[in-house]
Length: 395
Image (cartoon, rainbow, N blue to C red; front, side):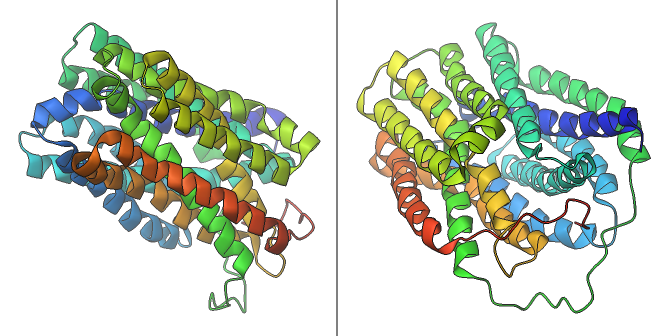
């Protein structure tokens, strides 16, 4: 493969990560308007967000099964297109029941897109024969930051929610279509299943611990994406337009952390970075919850984003290098458990928010971050990575 084709392939996959974050942030940055559109409480909105979780959790194992029979590059094209089409449907839903269905479909295609674009990222990484996974996740975070800023701009001008999401969906479809040729040119055969692999081996403790870290980290991400704007609006008392910047601060910090993550990990080591990341996330969320002011909220959510930025990439990397475990099996298990946290945490916070207040509801995330800190201590003992395998190996 020529250098030009390599880079075209990498850019194509980066675009899918970018659009996934960009379009999702356009939804979450305007959740206050969506809440008003449906006329629901925090708990009912939490239920609707939970439908997103169910959709994603249904899609993930199904997408994994399909990926063993069809190339993930083909699947990610379909998943990306239908995700773009599903997003505007939320704003066009005339009632709560149809709203729940559109949230389900959005979660379904987002989950399918997550699995397939990460599989493509692994293939690109092995073609380049160096660690570049953080660059793909950075593209997702850049998309989140720009999407949140776009949502804030539309909200500030009081632009109709339906038109806003339609325009963003059209833009996203055109962006993905522009890189489809480069993606299609670099597809091989579906991944081969190794002989003698039954999938019934006992899962080591180290994998379970890494999966828990992934779950806590993704719960933190989902909580900040879905509730930071509402918290800044309803608890802190900021305007809806300013509150949308809370998501932007979080996403910007995620972007910065992932852009420099590989270099930082090489210098300090994964375990040290994990510890520092966890402390940053805990301190940031505690600041946002204890000091009820707009500057504290923005600064706190920024620290949370910086802390969580490299947790998931490091978790997946370590899971793929556990002794006695095939890399694909370790990553698949950790990612499935981890992504479930991204969708399960936010609706739980919604229920707690209605019952006890949103500040107490977000303490659920703080509690999970403390659990993550404890688990990281255990990982230093049990999650012993094996020597790095050849990147030319099959996924």
